[in-house]
Length: 401
Image (cartoon, rainbow, N blue to C red):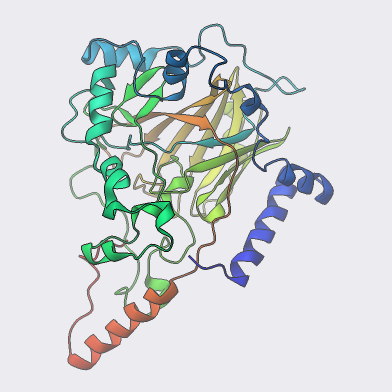
């Protein structure tokens, strides 16, 4: 993707807004930006190196190919995993000077695990053997290992797989190559309730579609194409083909959750308790794509309540009256345990919930997205061609919002 001057200006403005939200001076903000370069996450220094500890222990803790300890899969195992403690046994949660839990750092949810459970997975939790088999059979992993037999050493990649309908060859994507290890157990989906791992959408409930045909004006194209927002930012936080890093920044008065994808930043003011949240929410007329978020701490956990979502919660379709609750807890030095709860009676038959692992990552990298690129001209030109030929422009089957 191509960098643009306007994107750079927006990025600078976003950085300034984040600094203001956290109560930082420009110099302090710059220092914290420098501190976000590779190796800045203070907990990464504690990552064991080969030879420091037993290799099997490293694999168990870091999402290797085995060693979750689960030997029998089934409903009872699923429920035990869901209800397991949110902090690893023996781990002391680090805290800031004001006593609040330290969640600061860059974290990644790159994984073969997806929001909804695939049809071939019966249970939430996999045994070590099942996780290894699923990893070997996952189409994304096979593609990355074999796609066009391309290697970095090949030099410039030809893109010959584009004819097969792919937007990128596998060299350019980074979705993760293993299933998520959440609280020490391999997971087939982020959704944990309903037990089937599916979103309980009401019949006929759909994400509101954009205005227009999608072929008349750039503004009619979806927000992803226009490089404005993508579902990884949440809520709830999602994972994608690439750029699955998230940076968490904390101050006494606010928390900022910044997604590497398009560098969307959720600025979350803090209150003392859940009872204070309602008074802190903005008027409903001030709707935002990622909603209106307010946060507070409950012991070791940051709780975030989001309402009034203009776009809908990440990968979860939402109505304007829906609400999402997120919880962030340090599971250990290398992982943040992330939970979310979606409550929207207009869209769903029940409240549904998810659990996710966010793993320590070296840095947040540049994401230079160019609005529309060459495709925008082609899309609108096709619409004008249809106009000349008397063909109705219809985006209802093109997969866009």
